Length: 256
Length: 230
Image 1: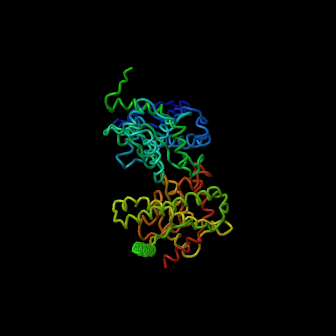
Image 2 (image 1 turned 30 degrees about the horizontal axis):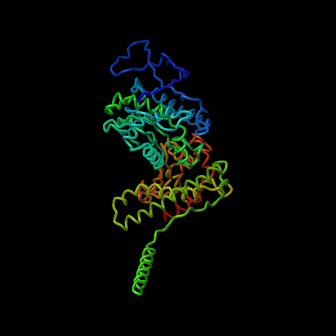
Image 3 (image 1 turned 90 degrees about the vertical axis):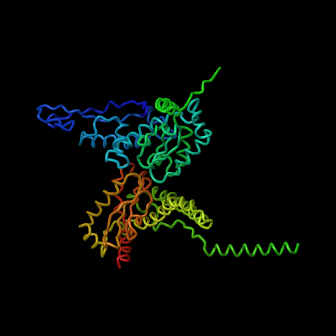
């Protein structure tokens, strides 16, 4: 369960279906009723918590217009279109839908759309204007504990991002069983929540994420992300939420 | 002193001999093949900017990393370091595959005034009609499968030499077509990695796939087909 700090886009019209098009909500319910009001669920496209030019010059407005406005929007719209065809998958939160459609490694057709929608929501919030710099206090302490030092963590994150073959994402994730932070890379649209990891940060390493601004210079993109975009604020809140589910040990209480 | 210089000379010759020995088993290094046309020659189907980046940066990087991986593999084999040998396989598959695939790709494209886009004639044209009904049907199929590739990969028209038929396949990342079957020979490959089209077509991969047919070099594909089906 991730803590999403989100602004839902309520500008998307919630369409109500024509009454003549009735559907069974659950198996076994008779379709004898004349007026069946059906419930339709739609996912909305959430806007990033900053203006589209807010990440300039490290991520251009143009890049965000295409990446968020066209590609991310496309995933949400395609997902809604898929869900319209069948109501078996109604009623899930996005997290639940990602895990369900992942189907233990044999993903259903909806998986790609919902996972990419999730990944991109998480990504916009993993960045902020004036980001970068270093985490503080508890999060820094946990990073130092699990990686040795912030520098080690940063090296590992960058190395993992640059060694991805093909399309994918790189994550800072809290591993539940191991009770520690780790850097992982995933291919295409895979997301650590499918194996019960708790994501803390992610970085989109698909070429579309950096090509408009950096062409093939992946290293510069990753470096700019670490130096100027990454939101340690978001990461801190996420880790704090995660600690409700994962016991990371006694907190260090500072005595004045 | 004389003894020492003798020894030095001996080790020198020994050293030289061993260098000669390793040189005779020397590693071939790969280099970037030239494009048979200018970067801008495929416009407007594919922009000159993309062609230049694709060739000089992406393909070159695959070659550089392929050479590096092969050198490391060579060392590991000589040392009998099996875990390194196995560990290097994915880097070799990825970078070597990238080199193989792109080398084919440059030949699969041709400027319009040099025959790009002209439909295949001869035995390949006939084989396409037999296997798929028509060239249009084949083009639809390849475009649809290319558009459906999730993430990065390639879409291919291949000749299955064993079954003696044409096949349309997709491969992920830089996997070469041979990973789909030892007897499958690539005739035509289309790169659907985002770097192949993003600067020009942004998200619209189907538009890229629609336009690329204007510069597909069917002559090359025909040549390979005739040679491999002989």
